[in-house]
Length: 280
Length: 254
Image 1 (spheres, one colour):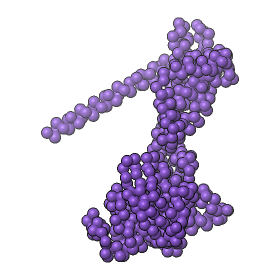
Image 2: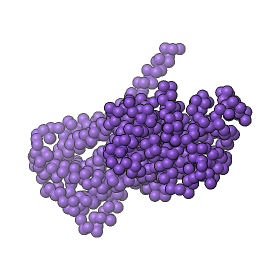
Image 3: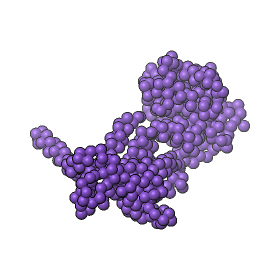
């Protein structure tokens, strides 16, 4: 009987491992494909891959300067717009859950999470791109901010709710207001979780494509950093070049994929590192 | 009315939603005395404490009826922040703020209410509070370290020091020794006794053990299912309980 149980145990563990591995296959495959196909492209272009604008079709040079700068600028701008809103929304939802505003914000945040990102792009197109007359980095940043908003809010919410109630009571018992407790007790205790949420938002903003389609424009062959002018982004470049009929453009897309995955991984590792040191 | 009492509770009723937790509690407590509140779990002891400093304001479906006076101050008509300035509280679990240093944990209250005019004065308050909580000797050389390095018992005494730093008129303690070791528990009891005698602080302490009540309290209140079944001087109640539930409790049968 004991042997049967031990056997079942091994069988079960094996199944769990197998399924876990299956779940990882796409990630591994993608990373591997990006390294195999993109690695040689970057290697042959060298530093120029990062300092030159994308090549004309059929040419044998590579570069993603405009998209790389664009992605970084978009990530920073959208974080600048999205994080403060997410932060205040999370504080409202966690610390004032029964207030009317708290309930409304939670509902909005949940709804936004379910909204297809292409619709967010169209929404920003109608309210910002059309009135301004042209796509812009600013419009795209706002679209990305809307996409990351519910994610960052949820992360920060989780971090804040994980702070034990007793610290809140201790602050209130000293005569602090609820807002003071929220900002001087709860947020500092949860600071690492809050930072993780921000990094997750950053990663999200770097990887999104759909919200950029109608909002960013494609300033690909000349660099523009003015937020009111059009820009480019790595995901958008991959989207365009991966289906281009020119081999060199498809190679640029592979190289860009590797760069994007690396950026993603960097932010992800950073987020993991902050989680590891969580206090309490 | 009731001006000569440190704490006056009259007809106090509390509901959580539809469930009534306190069913009309009334008692008067003279200044610088220690009251031990006893009763089985869920009888409403913690709720009573939270009604006194109005922490129940933050329980969304809690409703309070009746009257609470702290040194003649009508708690439910007064600004709640002023009430909590006068009524300190220590909780069941040690809860020093983990992101502040030991020093800042004690200084947070005085800073909040502007009690110190200078850095020196703040230093003196912090030292006094830590001494009153009998923690000074153990932490005086590491005031700027985080409290998370202290033992659970030390953390609880730090929580006490944090409450004392506001020089409260009344101190509420919610089973403060439930989660700490006996040595630390003794020290905590001793400092509570001392602040009552030397600094005239009135103490309301929820306790699970009749022995603790006998050791440190002047008065005991026995709460059963939201009702105050017994209130009186500790010795009298222990020797001659007027209610059979209290007698059973003191014999450890409840």
